[in-house]
Amino acid sequence: MKLVVGNQKTYLNRDGVLDFIEKTKKGKCDSVVVCPSSVYIDMFLEKSKFLVGSQNVSEKGNGASTGEISAEQLNSLGVSYSIVAHSERRANQKETGPMFVNKINNLFANDIIPIFCVGETKEEKEKGITKDIVGKQIMEVFDNIDSNNIEKIIVAYEPIWSIGTGLIPVNDDIIDVTNYIKDLVQDKYNKRVAVLYGGSVNKGNIDTLNSIDVVDGYLIGGASVKPEEFLYIMEKCE
Ligand code: PGA
Image (cartoon, rainbow, N blue to C red; front, side):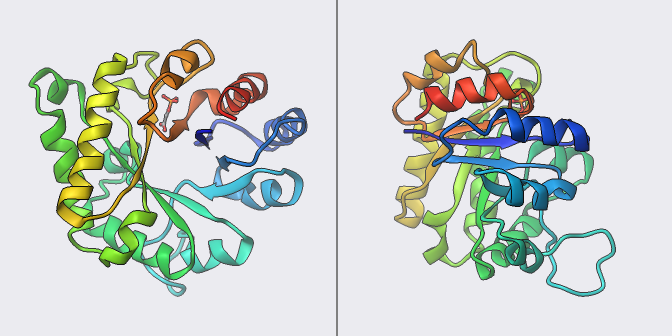
């Protein structure tokens, strides 16, 4: 069984969300997390059987932070996972390591599991420095959080050049980077972490990806808002 996490970004409006929930009702959702746009979190919690995650969290606690959503607020709704450090937030909101540390600490203080994203750009891959980049992204955060919390973090390896492009690494490359992440965390912190793969996961490549044992699940963007396709992937991952 693999963990399936849907990152619905801002793809859907209200009617699309209701349609998605209705059409995915028949699926078995034991290990499926949907991270809707935050305005629809409550709707998912009320109307769907999915576990629900957020796509982001404030680095601060409750208080004077206009436009933010705190971990405490997410917890009060029943949110159980939160994506942290997605490459779109690293690039567009200029979020960095120290902010991820604050976010992760706030999530742990509120019993929410962080899904921490790492990954290299196309240029970094071409230069052959994927592992250096991914290792740095992990260490700048893991070095600064309570080591007892490390094995509760889920790492999502998402090559940036693969997100939304239809391109995915060959299986051997996914295996290589996933093993590197697991070994790094084992050697440096003496902890085991689960690692998801993310980037253009869809119904056409899920069988090939599922042949990789070392990957513990998937973080899925575009295909997570198409009800039939998401159901298909969910079934393949049961
Ligand atoms: P994608 O997005 O599946 O559309 O490539 C993945 C992600 O951004 O997490």
